[in-house]
Length: 137
Length: 212
Image (cartoon, rainbow over all chains, first blue to last red; front, side):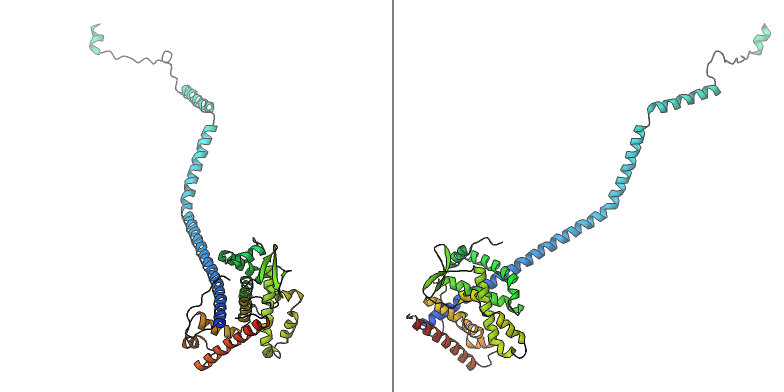
């Protein structure tokens, strides 16, 4: 059998049988210690996993808080952008001919009120003759 | 999910593959926790019982009482390698049940009047035909010694381990153990525990005509 466990020096003298017994005691205790170590490792790993989860949860919380702070600003920007977009769309939707017709009809109305042709409607303006020239004749 | 076969595990334990042993330990513990509840009275002892059963199983493998022969698991029975009829998990559970039953029997004098349920438990846990695989069978010196040490009381095991394995002085052991009240008493206990072991081993060696 492979000598897995070597007994340490003990104060009392051990005969061959005692050596066998002590060696067996040592081997069994080694196995128990190994199992305790594995259980301990599992606990440590569990604690590390818990710490990682806590860190992730904290990070998520910070991200959520940041999102909440930015939300009103973003909301306002979006609202303005939306209104501008609606305005552009409406402007694009209204036809140009409708705008021109409105403009022409307005001009005709103005002409009726205020004739603009100079020959027919010229107003003769009396020219003021100087008195001396009129007398000389 | 188990990703190893019983034969692979026995070979791994025999060659001291610690990584495989750890995997076996973890997988077995899950299995034990899921299936042992129906058999054991006290949940708080489950971990201790499981660890002792594991030590027992590993020593059976390391002392070559469980071996692979012709591609199957075999156990040394009265000088012959007999194929095992159960898998390692079932075998482990059988060892644990037996240890639990022995513990209950030791405590039964205290509990007979207070907890009649203990008697029912003893009946339920009586070794069935499936448990015959756990008979004490020693073919080698190491196997005989392993069995004797495994069969020791917890008290003796603790005293002898502290003294011989951890190399504590009697004064240090006295400080660690509240059960012992005097150094002389501790020394006597240590001597008696060791003496009992020696006698058991010598008796079994003599029966099998083995020399020390």
